[in-house]
Image (cartoon, rainbow, N blue to C red):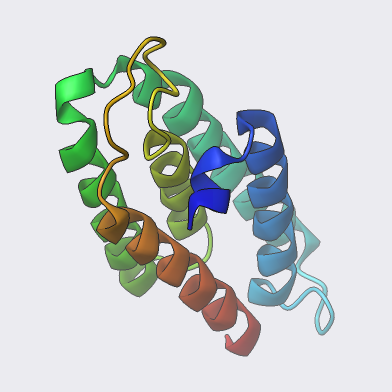
Amino acid sequence: MSTLTRMPRTQLLTAMALVIVIAELFANDIFGDADVGGWIGLSLFGIAVMLLLVLVLVPRIPADKRRAWTLGLGVGSVVACVVFWSALPFALAAATFVLAAPGEEHPGETGEASPSAGVILAALATLAAFIFCIIG
């Protein structure tokens, strides 16, 4: 689990963007009736939401609220997996992984890592959303 939270932010964003693009290939049946517009649109939407969450929201969360936000974003990724499983769970999961890294946003902070429950939920939601994209 610590691999997800210790991964450099740029590497995590690149990996999750790649996961979004590949998942959208399956979700928009690009291999069947070639809905290229939907694939590009939903991929860009998911990546934009992910960047907004990771680069704008996460740095603004105060240190004393990080644990609650990590769990909330993890739960949010599961809920998004049920409601809109093709792009949002990946974006929320990426924000959860970045937020769960201790000291990531607040240099000098050496406190304990955020609760693992949020990270586990986000990882499971990522896996489930990817499977839902494949099976349609």
